Amino acid sequence: MLGRYDGALPYARESWEASGRLLGEAHPDTLLNGDTYAYLLHANGDDEGAEAIYRATLDATRATLGDRHPDTAVALNNHAYILDVLGRYDETEAAYRQAIATLRAVYGAEHPEVCSALNNLGTMLYRNGRTDEAVACMDEVYRVRLRTLGGEHPDTLNTLNNLAVLNASRSEHSLAEEQYREVVRVSERTLGDAHPDTLSTMANLADLLRTTGKLDEAQSLGRETVGRAATTFGADHWRVGDYTSRHARTLLSLGRNAEALERFREAHAIASRALGDQDRRTQDIRSDIVSTLGAMHDEDPEGGYDTRARAWLEDGGAPDPG
Image (cartoon, rainbow, N blue to C red; front, top):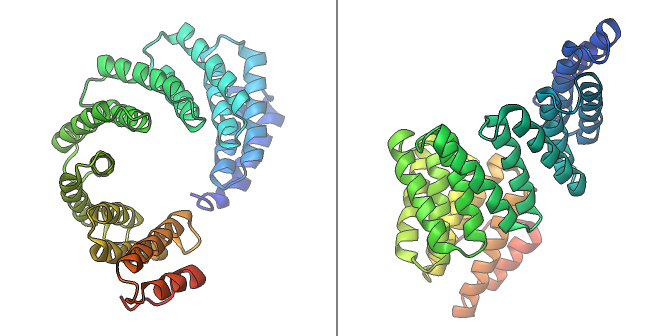
């Protein structure tokens, strides 16, 4: 996202400042322009600048409309989000909880804005290791969306996928598998076999199956995910590289090291082209290649795998003859 909107920044700032001068800092147009400017600052990597504008917008909204107005709650949610991005988690949690309380009082417990704020709070709690609390937030969001939107709505399916991720992370593997399978089943019917959301959950399910030792199904599902993703995104899309590397880890678990190495090399080539050599995801795949070569060296000390591993370590992906 970075840099995509840099050309719009000067105009957004000019609009915000002009409306503040002409209409006043608390005028609805000024507040709207402030939100737009803050969003663009965040989109271009200036999160500190975005936080300052979101905070100014929140203060002006609160002073004009009061703590119990829906616009104040939305401004709280926006400010909490950028605090979350900045890692100021104590402030983030307080802001999200205040936004949720206000939104519930104004709109009722089942309003989409309440779900959005609860989802954001749950995500923040998960990142901070408070998984049980995160599950409680996500479960509430899921139940509300199931009642109000139905089980086939993309937002409901996305929340169920998120719940499965949380349950897998706390070793509730059977529940997570059930939830992933339900998302895949419904997504294939309503969104299509090759929809990005369908593919994402298929990959998550394959990872879980690998973790729980269901390796043959994990391998088959992982291979299918890669094939569908290449059709949907094109062979050089970074998602294809991601799914290929995840499939390779399953091959590694099956002891098919040579096949795994080939898949990792394919994934690295895709990630290098799509993301660059310094991207964390590219470097993670490079580490997988080194680990795989190390395992192959243990099996065949005379095979030259240690030399190839050193080349990857030292040169970040020197030409590897295979």
